[in-house]
Length: 126
Image (cartoon, rainbow, N blue to C red; front, side, top):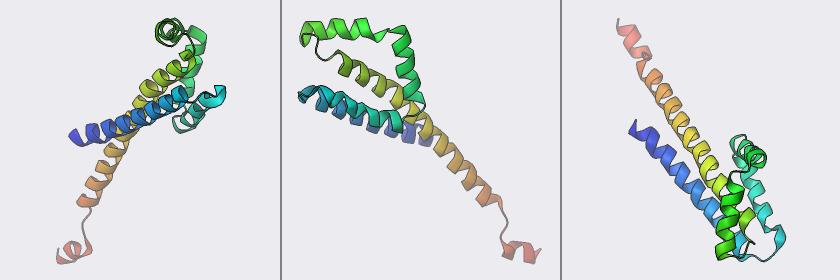
């Protein structure tokens, strides 16, 4: 159980750190097209992250929260970047956490099956 949590948590932290670096890149960069850097995450985290962006687009839960925060600190010019970072860090991180848990479970099952198979020398001695 600890191995599954270790790999899943490691992948979650790596993904969240990558999305934080993308957030910083978009925050520091003055071009309006910098937010398109998040498109890479849409590919890597498919289908979880595109669903999260679609749901956020329909419901708009993060829009008032992010806009209120950015109006206080950044005069409203980082709302899209902040929303993309929050969605990418949470849903993409959970996506990779689940993948890490699934991979560990599958590798453990394969390892257990390989250990149970008798070798040819044990079959001949019977």
